[in-house]
Length: 309
Ligand SMILES: Cc1cc2nc3c(=O)[nH]c(=O)nc-3n(C[C@H](O)[C@H](O)[C@H](O)COP(=O)(O)OP(=O)(O)OC[C@H]3O[C@@H](n4cnc5c(N)ncnc54)[C@H](O)[C@@H]3O)c2cc1C
Image 1 (cartoon, rainbow, N blue to C red):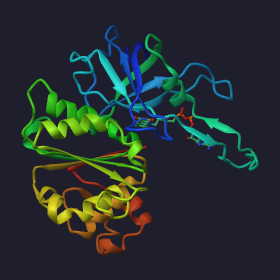
Image 2 (spheres, protein in one colour; image 1 turned 180 degrees about the horizontal axis):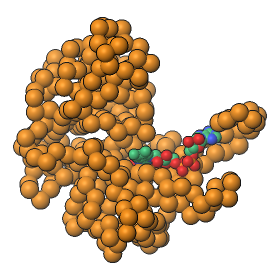
Image 3 (cartoon, rainbow, N blue to C red; image 1 turned 45 degrees about the horizontal axis):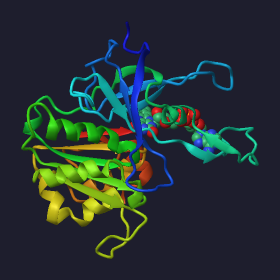
């Protein structure tokens, strides 16, 4: 059987995983794959495919969509038989997507697969493929590194799996430094907030930094984004970590989140091991990098793992 051939899993549980009442509907969905050839084959940081039933508007079977694994390599159950993910319902008003689309059509638009997955109940069957992804993984010798995990929205999913693996894995809690920075528009949108708060309370080497963009901070300052938080607290907290040869930076979230972080690293001369600059940008002062230059001329370097979608 090829890895992309779907197998039938069964939903074990589904619950909202936002911190409070939120305008976004984001769930934690656990799927039993124990009796399939995929059991035990997933590693934290990978993704899996879900094939929604039915056909698209052109009458072709729906294509699979990828979802990040939110579970550690040992699964939700400790044996790699139950995997999980963090689907967000895509809910919007229709907007023209291609030439010829009616600009006046603003009926409700519901994403096919995300709503299918969020509608599933415990006991339902679901077609799963995988594992997908080879680079967004923990290193072979996890205790030899420290970790800066940067997430926006559902981009937190792989860090739930990695944090559980590092702090509650079979080898005992790591002594490495682990810092999770989670960005969201409102406090109510924070995901898995209880778990990360608990891990931070249990382990002095684990820190959790919720970063909210559309509310004022506890200290009265304006809301901020992930890169702004890193920059504001650079000297007090993050510079030493970013300068350490042990540190790996992982970023996951919506495409574009890396732009601010890349610029911040460049501006503070911290980009060496984390970024690869195209020669056309090598002589440009990072403070002057445009968004377009960052998108086209800056890539992740060896100690930076990037997953954006
Ligand atoms: C590696 C990877 C990991 C991922 N992990 C996660 C995850 O953990 N959680 C998660 O929620 N998602 C994740 N995604 C995204 C996921 O794969 C789907 O893209 C997402 O759930 C939307 O799929 P859908 O079937 O609901 O939407 P679709 O039905 O596929 O709709 C999306 C498409 O519809 C069109 N569209 C969008 N808005 C409108 C509009 N307003 N009007 C008209 N058309 C519109 C666009 O063409 C868009 O591409 C991940 C993606 C990748 C690549």
